[in-house]
Length: 305
Image (cartoon, rainbow, N blue to C red; front, side, top):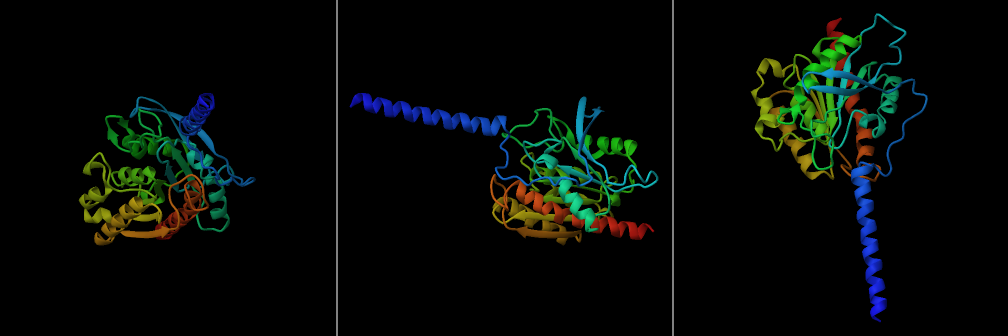
């Protein structure tokens, strides 16, 4: 009898050990991947490339992802609007392509004329701590590196020097998912000379680092004349109660300040499996965000001409 219970105990310990090992592999080795991720369409005519540059702000070589418009090599005199996409926690420069199938979204929007051909940049927003499931990227200049300067100023100059961009800020948009949504507003609102269009998907607007890096508070300090330049799109999943509440509150602040914005609550939210969950949510609603961006680009173009 004792031998039987000993075998059961050993078997139980083996199962627990297997579960712990599997959990460790899933989170720390595999990076907690989506179990049913969106699929990248083939033959979109778009390619995702990783590029590098020497960053003075971070004191190291940094990466960014690049997706050029399909006619970029054919129309050598044409200049294009620019979109920065910021990843969330435990992401990197490849996240929007590998996890959100961004080239598929762009292909469909270009085909339906909902978004003008654009240069799309996916920065590596990780600070000097690197990427980890234990923390979000610090999207500001702080003790872990000058990520705010890296993205809001330095990378802008790199992109303008390397590619044929429209240089006016009304043709530059920045957005992101989860902490990348916070980062887009936290960085972008400080660089309105570079960016005028912003979007957040399942993001937040009050950061644990304090009011200095909380768009909910910072935006009220922006002069009235500057606020008129801002265009904002916000969405959050109905299952993400905290993110939804934070997004709704920011939307209300934007309304109070007379800042043009659009807010939506959609089914779903953060998670690892489900049609409206995790990267499936962000893939689906990236199309909505970029459709909004496309409207702003078209309006800016009409006013320019």
